[in-house]
Image (cartoon, rainbow, N blue to C red):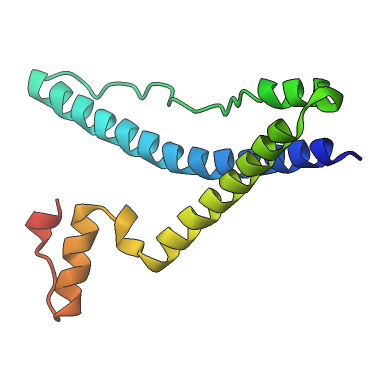
Length: 137
């Protein structure tokens, strides 16, 4: 296997891993949005005196990654100059390191992805208090 083919394979694997993690995060956001919309519609229906609305199909994200540039790299494999090979190598290294950076950032700074409500609750617990029920909503 040529060096370029190996780099393209590595790049593809890293992009797939990165998109998998991104998709999980986007699914969580989408689920929260759908839950909030369902609650809003329920409140609106009760105000108008209507029965509860039917739950619509939830939106789902389908990961579609455009990896045509990897195919392009593989087609031009024998005509790539050393600079282009270096660019592919740098791209593969960057994607791998950025994914690892995001994992480490989340691991050592758990408050980054925490909601404001959770931050308040955890801060209160740290000093021995509990957040009242009416504030929790």
